[in-house]
Image (cartoon, rainbow, N blue to C red):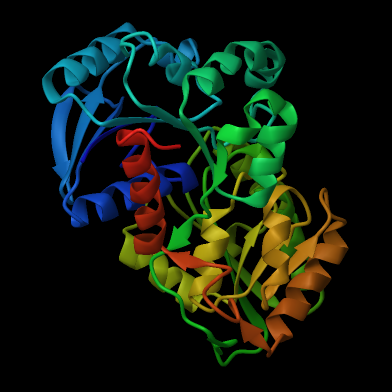
Length: 369
């Protein structure tokens, strides 16, 4: 089967959506399918990564027009003519690339859509435009054969805000590379040093600022916290300023990008991962952390709340009281119970997820719902 994925960002960028597209694509290729990805890049080039063909399209103006780009539409049109994909899978409600990608798609093409829907925008401009964009985005849902969601929370958001398309919405929970069901591991012998980890885009809504502020409280309580931040984004300069104000620079390391293996080692070496985001359609990094047996602290909001049903995952209301967050970090540090799903129904591996996608793709290709 030939599948075309359309997304605004792909490697070497990082993030849950990018990782989802990558894992699904590579697992589909691994079972004999052809997957092509078209996305924005720093230069026009064609690449192959683990069997997946990627067209990177340079577009200077796309970031100023929320993903609108004539060059990428031309490339989509040429791919449709030359490769004749069985399925076109568009990703991302929060970019106008998804809507404009419909323009070169002729009648009869099987379109499916993964909105990765948060309901709100993540910048003041995006949030301002989001209310009006709902009516434009209606077209995406109407044109799509299937609308994929990755969590019960996202599915409920989509069906509530777009009730006319409830019958199109399907839930395919996302996955992880591996699952280790175990007791909490002892990561260090120094019972005063707490290794904290954040992985993701550096945006204000991700809640990294709360973690940074908690470090001073932990120090006052006699602990030696160390926070590793993996990621990049527009909020980084604000975080650097906050670190200076809090005087915790020696307690924090930044890594813009690490390999999959290096990230896995960081998860295994950390006492806990934290994601205090106010908008997540799934929370892939939390699933990965729990899958490796590393405890997590998440916000009691959006899709992240679903993870608190899994042993070793603890929730806190946001915005949190910083002293409450510090206390929860200490309690999680001292937690000695099981971590991770009691069985493999809560968190699945990517090969199982890709198999679900292929089954649905195949039904669409051969005319079934």
